[in-house]
Image (tube, rainbow, N blue to C red; front, side, top):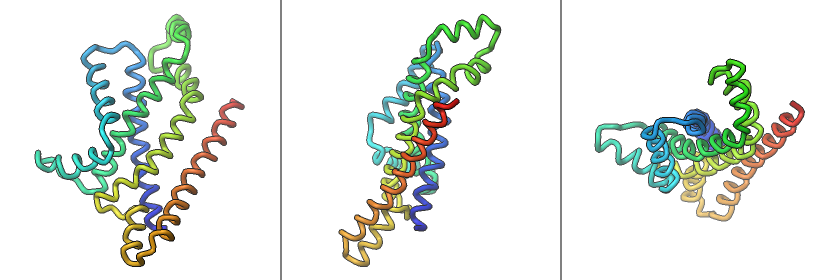
Length: 203
């Protein structure tokens, strides 16, 4: 149970940071931005979506200290998960923003709204309905992929199971229990997602 809370903590903090990254990049890329800045964002997205998360974690924790950037295993885990899923979430946000009729932006401008007001009162509320399900799926994915941080000697759920297996030599019981724990957590997220979608339909 203690390891489960560590898994929830790591995945939640990483998701919040990834969400901030995703909203920032996804929003900017849904508008016209300087060519160079757009290419920087595209490079970030392609690198983190095109390489395995495990390799990214190894690079952050073991590679960056070679150039003087050292961090704890928890910091490396959160940074790796955040940057990886930030790339995916940015595309979710961008697709949600682009699905809104451009005429609404023109109407907002004609009413004298600035970009910030238009984002928070017109674009984001509509985009939220579209991206809610993909975002909850992303949170479920980050929770499951947090099992990879066990390679950084963090005693989250998967590593706790490995340590119990080393002591008991009972793989069936140990990994079946791990599967049940992960299923309960992801199923809870799915139920919460459906609840939010129903609430959004009433708004």
